[in-house]
Length: 481
Image (cartoon, rainbow, N blue to C red; front, side, top):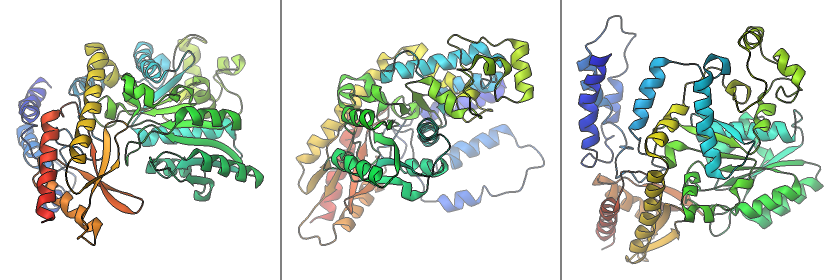
C-alpha cells in the first residue's frame, strides 16, 4: 500500500502544482479516449505504474478541469486535497457508521460535523441531519420528509410549490417522493429571479379553494442559473401562516452564511424546516459531499421510520427495536445503545443503511484549519464577483442580466447590427473557451441565451478573473467588428 500511495503522490503532486498552467478543458478527443476504455473483464493484473500513467496522461486530462482556477462554469468546487487524506483513512479502516453500536465514536464524529453545519445555518438545539452524495439526494430526502410530516401517506391532494429558477433535482425529487408533475406548482420568478411571493400566495389560495392540500414550499438560497436568493424571511412568514413546510435549497449559496454579506442576504434561513448544504461547493470539498439539515431532528426520524410510531418518541418501541429487522434489534439489545443523549443512529433518520464514512471529509479540514480560512476564501469570492461585474459593466456591448447576490453573475453580449442575439453569445462563448484559460457556461433566462461566471474555487483569485475579462473583451471585439 505504501508503494502504491507513493506512486500516486508522484503524480498527484505535479498535477496540483501545475493546475494554474493546465487548460481549463480538454475534451476535444473525448470519443476516441472513451472508446479505449471499453474492454472485457480483465483476467490478469496490470502494472500499477502503467495504470497510473494512463490515468494521469490520458484519462483524467480528457475532461473539464473542475479543480483548476479557471473553471468558472456551472458551480465550481475545487477539491480540497485534505479530503483525499480523509478518504484514505475512512476507506482503509472501513468503519460502519450507519448503525451506532458498530462505531459509536466514529458515528459521533460525523454527528458533530453535522452539528457544525447546523450551527452555520443558525439552527438551535434539537436540529440534526446527515451527509449525502450531494444536493440531489438531499433534496429528495428533504421533500420526502416534508411529505411524511405534513401529509402522512395520503398523497391524493398534496401540492408543493417551487420557483421556475429551482434546480432540476427539485422536480425529480418530487417525482421520486410520489408526486405527479401536475402536483408541483412552478411559480414564476420576479425581475431578480426570486420566487414571486404574491403569485405564490394566490396559487396557495386557489389550490385550497379547489380542495387540494398545499404542504411545502421549496425556496432557493443561490440558484444555479444566476445565484438568486429568495426572500427567505418573508417565505418563512407565509409558510408559518399557511402551515407549509419550508425547504431551502442552499446547496450552492449556504456556506456564504459564514460571511456577513451572506447572512444578510439569507436572513430567515434559520426558520426553514429543512436546508440543503453542499460542502463540495461552498466548502470547496471534492464532489460527493452533500448534506440535509433539519430544524427538528425528530422530523427526520419520524419520516424515515417504517411504521406508524416514531421509535425515538415511543420508549416501548425504542426498547424493542421498533421497526428494525431482527438481526439489528438483537444487536441493539446486546450492545445496549443508550436511549437518550446526543447519539445518532443514521440508518434511523436517512434512506441509507450501507453508507460510507462521509463525515471525516468535513471534520478533518475544519479541525486542521478552523473555519476562518473558509470564511476568508468566501469573502474573496464575493469580492471577485463584484469586481467582475463592475468591469463587465464598463465594457461596450455588455448587458448585465443578473447582478451577483453571491458569487455568480450573468451577462449578455448585445449589438444592434446582430439579428440573432443568441448566436452572437454562442460565438463569444466559443471564443472565450477556445483559449482554454478559463471555462464559462451558458444558461437561458426569459428565452434568451446568457453567459455565466461563477467564482467558487479556493484556487481562483483576482489574476484569474483578469484573464477571464481579457478573454471576454477579446472575444467581443473579434465577434463585433
